[in-house]
Length: 139
Image (cartoon, rainbow, N blue to C red; front, side):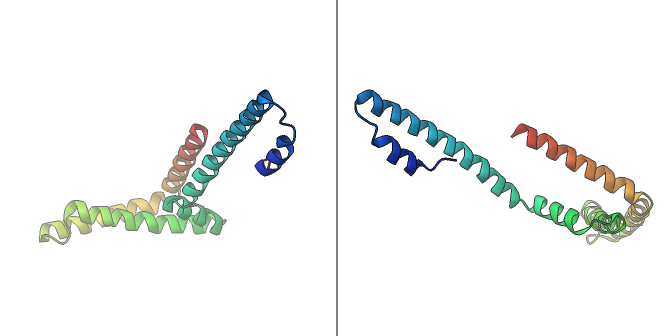
């Protein structure tokens, strides 16, 4: 990117009449619009880097190059998330019936997650990557 102060210093010595001044103004407007677009682009990258989901996702993928560790971390996350949702839906702490149904559903969910963790995690990862690819092409 050009330094606008250099352009002004170079071109102001060449301004001899009104048309030269108009041409210089057009150049400066063009340079300003280019800088605005560049600033918007870099600002969007900065905002996206502060997105908590983006931070978590990049941290996990950078820290865990080993597939087995990634599957285990994902399995724990899925189980905790499933238990949270089941507790909220069935009202674990509101009644005895809610407690019993929550415990039963948590056991079923844990069993399903344990058996299919690798498939679930790879499917979620593929969906996240597919959504990111679509977001990048839309920007």
